[in-house]
Structure formats: C-alpha cells, structure tokens
Amino acid sequence: MIPAIALLALGLIGFTASALFIKKQKTLRIICMVLCAAAVILSALWIWLTAYFVWAVGQDVPAEIPDDPAAGEDGGDWRTWRSYTEDYPIKEDLSVTLSPLDSGTGFAVYDASTGERIGTVPEGGAQDEILCEDIDDDGISELGIALAEGTVWYRYTGSPWIDGTGGGCFEKAE
Image (tube, rainbow, N blue to C red; front, side, top):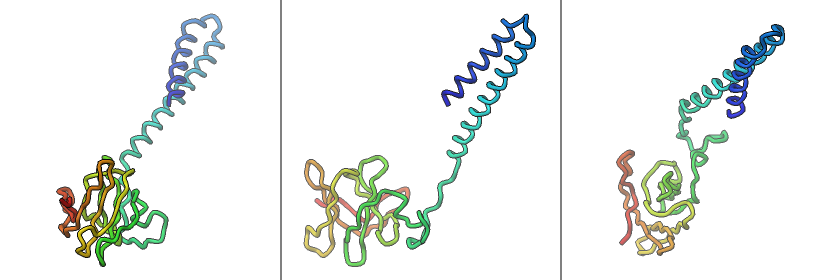
C-alpha cells in the first residue's frame, strides 16, 4: 500500500512539474503528462481495490460451525475451529475439552462429544497446566488449573450454560 501511495504522489508531482516546467517542448510535455497520469490512475485504482478488499473481507460472515462432529471434509470437525485441549473425563458419560478465552484469562469449557459450550473456568490461560482428578472421592473428577500460586480446583455441578448470561457446570471448589 505504501509503494502505491508513493507512486501516486510521484505521479501527481510529475504531472504538475511537466505542465509547469516543460513549456517549450510540447511533445515531451504531453508524453510526460500522459505517463504521469497513467501512474496516478493505476496507483489510485490499486489503492481503491486494496481498500475494497479489506472492507469486503471485514463484511464476510464467518462460516457456521457444523453441527455434525463427524463431518468428513477439512474444517468440518468442530475441533478445528479453536485451540482445544485434550479431553478430560469428568464422569462416566461426560468428557470436556477446554479452549483459552480470547481475553487470555480463563477457559471456555465444551462437551468433548458434541462441542456444545457448557461452562467457563475463569482462571488460567493457554500456558497454564490443566489437571483432572477426583479430589473429593465422589466419583466425579474436578478440573484444576495449576497456577504459580497453587492449583485452583473447579467441581462439576451440572448447571446449564446460558449463552450471553454465563453460568455453567463448573464452580470453584472451596
């Protein structure tokens, strides 16, 4: 983009200089003005096309995440859409996978079999270790985030995740 702007500026300067300073040689003045005008038009067209494509990409609606986790084409599996961790078995019929939140402060929790969002663990980030252990011997594993200050544990509650409101199935274990 910078070279196109520089070429546009040079073309305008060359066009103006040709008109002002080459008065005695009419043919040379016309050739210089035509070449500079062509450079200005091509540069302006390049800048406009670049701006249009930047705008068009910004307007593009993102592809829908497919509902079928077994979709066969590349990108069809919901796990390809974000940076997911390994699967952590919470109870017999539930395994979860986590993805770092965009803010870098915590994890979104997803059902590993369907990809459905089921909660949030509001501590930790992409670099922190995730643990999965049954620390209270109730048969349901807790998720732990190993931070520098110690491990923070979250227990499964089964509460629903409400999109836009939050909540979810994990709460901090005291």
